[in-house]
Image (tube, rainbow, N blue to C red):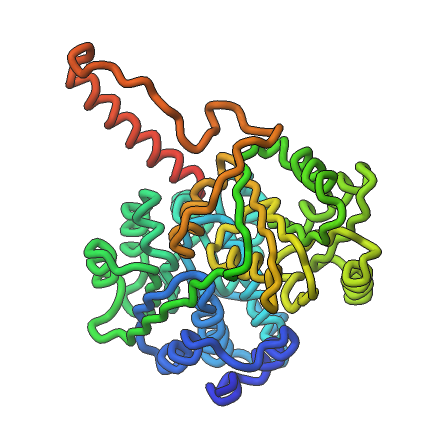
Length: 427
């Protein structure tokens, strides 16, 4: 089965070929025909299964084919908002936007990504220029709707991604508000990694009476020969810890993963300042520069290669001794892909992961996916301050020394603060 067999149009096929994609993943193979037929879809799938492409490709194709205009002059037409994709976190929103840009490169279809935690000026300007597809976190979406920057009356395609995480992060009421603003006549897509009763109930409010259903179970096996460890560390001390580890074992060839291109360049500068030969590969580097960096790393001329996940696709270095996750990935499956680059062909490998206080939810998701608790290294010189430790031991006092009502009030306050932190993290 190829993408061509799924009757994907030529402009999108060309983009997929340029990315090196020829064969769909199981969720893409099952979902794309359902969505191209116009049916709603209920998908039970975790990140790492290819679900972003599973909904992005048919949405792009449907908008391309169903929008009255001369396809040759599509880039000059004024876009109109036709699709809304709602996701719980800014990181995931950005990744979905990048995928839409990649797959829709030759269609002229525009997408805009909006999320909280940053000034809204650039986002509102993009909306005013016009967009076909909007990717949004719930809080910022409702905020800009209330200010009159967004109108959902013409939405034809609606995607709710990672519904279970929406529920966990306290966004369920925001999601219900968004649903009430959508036109009743639309195609709806609903994705969740789990199907708890609350999730099933929510899906019933979003989807039509007879949606297509797809369930995908991802492979969760972590490389057996990889020795994994976690280092709890403050964000500001990560660079010092990295230099310390490299100086302890300078002979190990090391692949360091950064979540961003800017972060990768910054890590290289820090290592070079410490006298460690390091190179970076990411999307802003030319193909020639990336190939040279990879060649120098394979030959041993450079002992450290710092990469983003997208740039690291296809990297296969025999005898790679160590992978370091400078930033924990927000997608659990990405962790498995990263550490699988060491410990290949029955060789032993090491995977070290730095985790600051903001990354603890990512670690929780990773350990849930691989079904194991990763050992923690406690004896390093850059341990975080006590208030950012994973577990805080509290000296227990007899219950009689405190009022029960006060204890309940404290529990309620803790729950409120936790939900508030989750809302801020997602927006």
